[in-house]
Image (cartoon, rainbow, N blue to C red; front, side, top):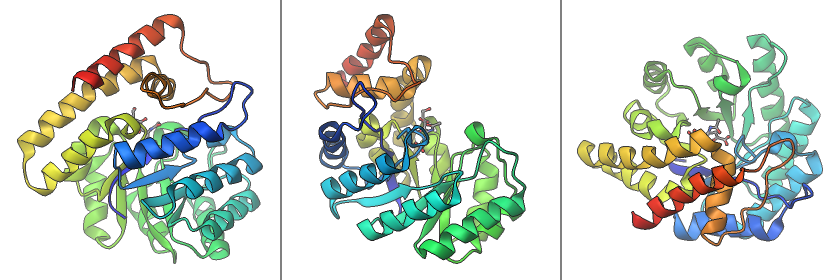
Length: 290
Ligand code: NAY
């Protein structure tokens, strides 16, 4: 449970159904070409909050079938509907996923006690390793060091996908809980996350930048900060362009240009305009020249 993991995009057909062939290609791209250490399935990047339960189960099944035991697999099974989250968690466990992850319950302003009881129920009823998915920028849920400590004390909670930018808090958390795993979640700050104590990172852009991210991770393990900085700057040139146009849409466009059938977005996400596609194609050129 460490290293560089791709938050996998989900390829859809134009009518919103799952594009199985494309999904298998995206899995292969990450394992065979990017050689990442793991895949995070059904996260924000995977658009799973726009999918129904049947499709989310199908997604988990196809990815496991294609990936086998080649890399670590983490299934994001969180849902506002607790019974659905438990069913998805049990499905992922039965399929052989290494760990589950669940988004903090969102939309309503849940109290911390409510958030804690959500993780207690899912872990009790799935009895499988759980990684808390904290992404305050999308959910609005901010947790203190004590809150994280209470969640990490729940049996089966093995770590946090920490998609937050408060890195002093991360350093403190790793000091307090050295045996738990922490994954960074802002790809333009991979260097800072690892230096601050993260065991690895889970991010969308690693479908395209996985090799650089792995090299950066290794450079830090070898105390080669200069090399890590230079790799981060190289990656950030691409990430900034993606953020300007739309990260998920750009990922799909660039992968398609590279011959990987990354499919369409799920409604109501928009596809790129022609002008945005031209901008995204610049990324194809940057990646080809690197
Ligand atoms: C997920 O669940 O898909 C993630 O891992 C989230 C991490 C990504 N954040 C979002 C909001 O999608 O990889 C990052 C992000 O796309 C990247 O830093 C570029 O902004």
